[in-house]
Image 1: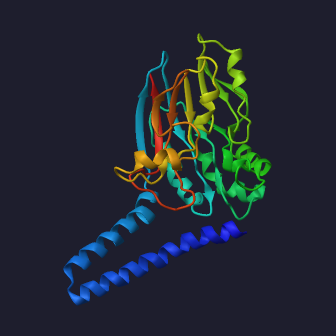
Image 2: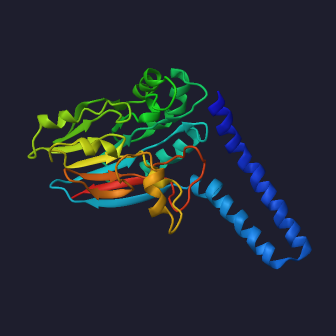
Length: 297
């Protein structure tokens, strides 16, 4: 309850802050103070951008990944439906996905929720209804916010809702996508990512791992996984120029030195998507919500 009050305070307080800055801007305008006018206009413009403009954008980003077979994947993550965004934004995301061409599958790398007020199965079915309109198969894993690390006890209701909308969910299991083996690993923060599953395969097989937290790859013991797809970091969410690289090791919700995009790890290629929604602050800067198209070639 206290956390909901705090987050609602941040959400609605942003409107009050923007109005306060606007009043200061008007005061400088009426008094003809040019320097003050320019400064407060800049503050107002920047705040409106990071609070209302960039978080509502949807960017489609295409990346070619070196592989020994061809596959076209849409990767999204960190929906965080709940206190800041709802199914209306998800409908926009699904509409963008359905306009893409030559896509084999959509993979969702966890964190469907963020402090929803109603955690019943019925409420989740309404919240995630847009996923049922995606034109290709949808594979998903849960993230830390979906398995109480942190968050509310909602796993059963969430999985039931995803199943109702034909989202294929497994944990520490595999799914055959043609000749490709997709290995689902559970939440790292909940200690549920059983990387020992990779020991049952070998490097001659086509292996894609779908999980939530990039820290999972730090436990890999072999190079059987060709590609690992994750979210979790939001790529920093707010990427301040010249500052981001210095604060990143202290602000990211990971243990390893993980950031964003395609990374060559010791045992696997790792792709970290920026995600689509926000946590704590309902803001983004130089890092808009992103739908990733991954072309394996």
